[in-house]
Image (cartoon, rainbow, N blue to C red; front, side, top):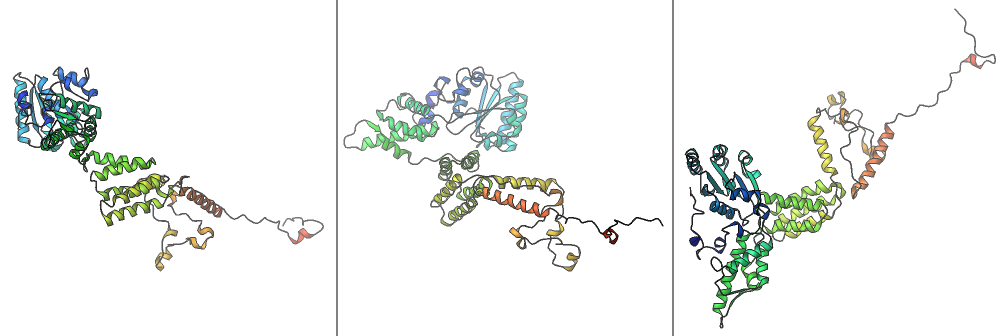
Length: 480
């Protein structure tokens, strides 16, 4: 356990030039905060609770570089409570129990309450998280957990129900630019004492490249300015160091896209791809596909999702869609990556541009519901094969009509169990090829209905007896 180790350094030491620029430029008060105004703006409930030292257990959820640890530092600096911090990566049950015991003792003796900051709380397992519960419930500690993962999946339900979740958003480009400008002009903690010229285009490129992460932006600025100083020192006529767009681009190289193949972002991106294709938006579909592939997603996983989409959202509106999706999967498997990316792109664009129908998906859902809910009736006898004499004696196959021997290859027989006769699971739409299928199925239904009607009886004629032929009329009935 590390008690207060993240926050106990005096300001001068924290601002030492040996520390990374991102660490030196952390805000030391609310007035220096940039971004997250909806949570930490003046008068907001979270800021009010921090300033009044009435903070209860909270979970800070957001991407890297959005201010979770910075906020913990601010809480440590303004709160009158005992502040303890440790990382889930380095601590275990033993350390947790020691903190809980100290917090209980402090509260019982009337000492200050304890605020416990747990960085990367999602890395704690269930047993470790459960260890917090008694102290949280008793009010011995106020827990502050920081996580980049969705708390719904990574934090125990019991602990989550006792905490307020605050979502920190990626910083806007304008906010990142403000942070970079402050670092360039700050002569105490930043780069203000260096004789630097940073082109506005370079600053804007860094802000955009950081993708909402202030830490990445400040690290890139520090690398870029160091490269500019080194280049100037090596020049024949050294002058003022200049960070231009070209040098900034060399420093940035290729951005590593934020992505976790096992986390929420994985599911968010595949959901965006699926829904963009469903909404017939090929431009959005190709963008989300590229985001996944360029971030290192398994291409065969993407291919499997395309195959699923072809049946679920297109179906028989364009039967070729499934062929295209399966072909893309085979192409990726055959040629590998990165060459397989165009096969996936071709399939995604085709699927996004195809007519849509979920009739196959809903038909299966209705049939599956009936299969689970209703009595599993035996297969009607006329649909059963009868390869043996006993089976024929038991009427297997009796009444079956071979469709190919019937006009229009449609036989007037029922193929559903008796209790489900007349049930329609598949209802084709009027889009794409399903329009043809709808007309075809309707025609077959009319044929079946016509053939099931009983044949009309011939008109009846009066029975004529020999006496009826007499001109005197019918014979009179006599009594015996």
